[in-house]
Length: 219
Image (cartoon, rainbow, N blue to C red):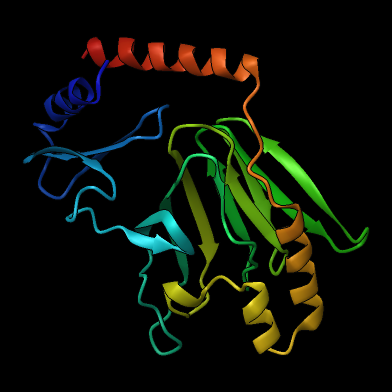
């Protein structure tokens, strides 16, 4: 089913919602549809009313579900839960966070993690539906192996710092006087590659698209 058909199906489903309730449809092609009783639309950078924020890098976007992007030590969020939209065949600038970080991949993804004990980068291929937990201050880079936009759901413990500053890059680590962290982040940078999708994964993706069309057409 087309995006427009998916919007119509979600709009019908949302028409009876109480005020303030919303529905989100996270499609296997990476598109995110959002609806309430007033209507439905695609959540994406093409919509100026989506409320998306730049997510670490250009072409990557975030939409907050829980928590506030404008946190500060005086007004901290205890935790954040957000939707991320990752551009095709791309990977985030390697970074670390001051607290643990959980990411659910809803498409073919990858994550490079720095193993401090073995002093090397570990590349992890993530299939759709895989959740990865990343400990605090572990250098990592999340990537999109596919040719479609990748939707992710990310949960972080609260840092009490602004959205623009919560990711510690190699440059930021140097400025903070943490040369070991900066060196580890540069190793992740050197190894960074979003990876590719296998033939079996492409077939599975087509089947998921067909299943989504069947589900949306039956509403």
